[in-house]
Structures are given as structure tokens and as C-alpha cells.
Image (cartoon, rainbow, N blue to C red; front, side, top):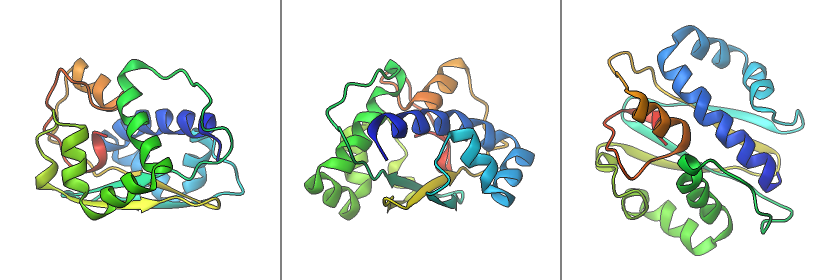
Length: 172
């Protein structure tokens, strides 16, 4: 997948993750029919989708498979820049990717120091391929109340001005 397509899909996925964490019907619809999610995100029909359902204390990080012009400048909302840069580095820097796979909590703490709950989760790294894309379905978070700053953070990565205490695949 090219960089521009991946960034657009990631931004949409971050937005839908918040909705799915709060809407059980939407979450179940996507689990039963991943085609709905494929269409919402704009993923090519030739790419297999593997849905990963988060559990309460598990967090999955899909590393994108990218090809084409990786130097292309792509405009990204400021709130999402940190997560886009992190995942691009994981996709293109084999040394960084190896360290992330070996010690995900430590690498995440280094890169997202404002998030205080990395040690409370089991973090799993999955790698996309040219023919398979992993999409994370967040766990339901019925007890989580978010203010506007938290919603912006979830929609676009982690901001440096807030600390969020949430569970599963909702916040990154």
C-alpha cells in the first residue's frame, strides 16, 4: 500500500475506533461483516482484512506494509502526527521495528511518555503484508467518559498535553 493511502486509512480507523468502543451494535456489525469496515476505510478489495478484537488488557499495534514513494510529503492533522511518524518509522526502519517487537512497552514509553498505562497492558505487534491488513476492533469501554480533549487525542494519536486512562485499543 502506498504511504498516502495508508495515512488516509489510519486516520479513518482512529476515528472509527472511538465510535466502535462506545457503540456495541456498530462493533458487532463490523465483526460480522468486515466488508462494511473495508468500505468505510477505503481498503482495496484485493487486500485480505484480518480483524483483531482487543481484549480489556491487550493492545495490538499493526505495523503497515508500505511500498512506493515513502519520501512523499503528506499533510497530516497535528493531532495525528506523532502516531503517523511512529508507525512510519516502525514500517521503514528495521532496527526500530525489531526493538519494538522485542520490547513494545519500553519503546512505546520512549515515544509516548505522556501515556502512563503501557505497563498495564499486554502489547502485541502485528505486521501487515502486501496482501493482508490488520484492523483492530477496540474493546467496549462503557465505563469510559471522555472530554473533548480526550476525543481529539483518540482521533489523532496522543497529545503532549493530556494523560488518558483508558483500556484496550481505544487510545492509539
